[in-house]
Image (tube, rainbow, N blue to C red; front, side):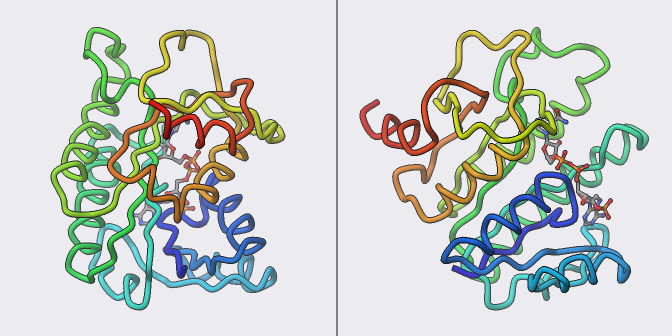
Length: 217
Ligand SMILES: NC(=O)c1ccc[n+]([C@@H]2O[C@H](COP(=O)([O-])OP(=O)(O)OC[C@H]3O[C@@H](n4cnc5c(N)ncnc54)[C@H](OP(=O)(O)O)[C@@H]3O)[C@@H](O)[C@H]2O)c1
């Protein structure tokens, strides 16, 4: 599959491009600055120059699947979270529908689909943005999977995860970005994950086992 990675230059995005390149799929990293292109060229990974704050419809041409793993980051004003994590994601969903690209994986966040009592004041705007984009995706006709990872780390991947509709014990737990990228690579063409919103944390099942276990629930 030709896979567009929106947020390709990000920390999950960079890992994901490499894993997809090493698989049978063909990643295309969507980047927003010319100077980001050479990093991908050196690894033989295609890029498309596009910005979520402008018209980015050209990026969807020839794609079979979209992964949205962009984000405004913690160092920008709260208003930017609405622009990228909410409105950018919603535009990407609409563009996928317009372009007839049916497969869409959203990197959302753990707790975004839970009671707002669990949201700290500092993070409320973030969860609201994620929840609005996720709701838009659920109402679309796309073959979506919404991944809801907990706090991300840059530790090496372990290939051991907990992946399910609702993880009960979440406090203090994390997941390496590398494992999030591995899960996306595994589920990109796995129809049993279509239409699902899945919590994701480091756990004790291999990624393959965790995906298989979804079928039995
Ligand atoms: N941090 C956590 O603990 C945590 C937990 C759960 C979920 N998440 C979510 O996981 C996702 C990926 O996380 P990450 O750590 O990989 O994020 P990251 O490293 O901050 O990457 C975000 C990417 O989004 C891109 N981006 C920002 N504005 C853009 C725009 N206008 N047009 C195009 N691209 C734009 C950035 O581009 P540049 O490279 O050009 O800056 C960057 O490559 C995010 O959605 C985040 O909210 C995070």
